Image (cartoon, rainbow, N blue to C red; front, side, top):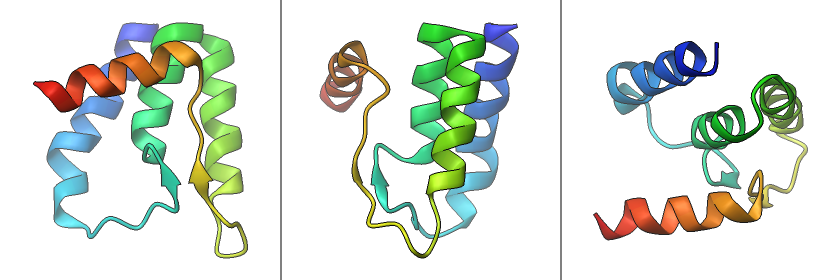
Length: 81
């Protein structure tokens, strides 16, 4: 289940997201947050991602919001590659 959801999110990131300007008020982006949360927490990560999408609205202040401390390391590894 985790792999299927992560595959769908990765497909969105590579095929659909490049056609739109970056708009996310949070760092990492909502799709990256969802990918990391689901990969680490499974179904709980799915609910974390849904809650993040609900919070991402014109009235939110945004900011830095990682799903876990491990996610920080994974994002830094991606930036080095």
